[in-house]
Length: 237
Image (cartoon, rainbow, N blue to C red; front, side, top):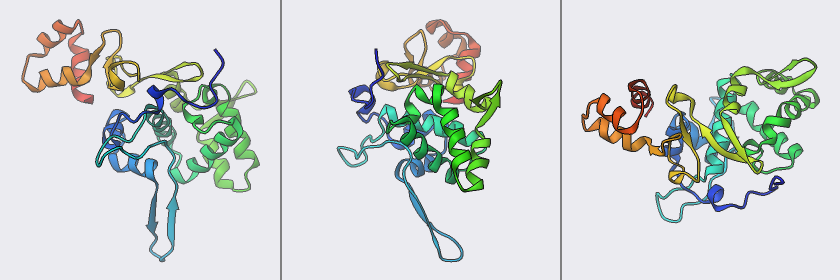
């Protein structure tokens, strides 16, 4: 099926997470996620102001303190976290993402499969065409040339290989912080809540039993998981 140029499936566009919840799922600080979602304005010591626009998709909650982050926003933030873990500062990531969106031609380019296939080359072009040396430095932190091709550096590539695409868009993300336990988020599975792949078990169900002081071995046996997996879930949750 051809890639949809605009995400129109409610599984992607309906808000299902609070900002703090989405931050926890992708293992970034809540304030960091909020900065990505709504932007910020801060004063420097010299009195000048730094204004930063949002970089991930959110929608206004239907009710006060309601959910505001759709799955597509979570997917975008997951990739932004990969860029930051590669050591690129947010002030350089934002212009690069705008360039990606413009030249890939998709408003949610970070959630598109084309990020994996074309993204490194697009960003390489951005670094070479920008008049700002800092932009080139930012791209150098994300992209390398191997065998004459522009490819993402290993830290970003690791994040991308954990993404499964369908119809050109992110369908499932395997969360790296759970280690050997294959925990995924998929908007078609348990409402997008972190779930043990292949078992359909929500992480929150496992954690609630552990918090009730049930023995790890019993929980592992009931769910057909290893004790190692249960311990990995305990540490990451």
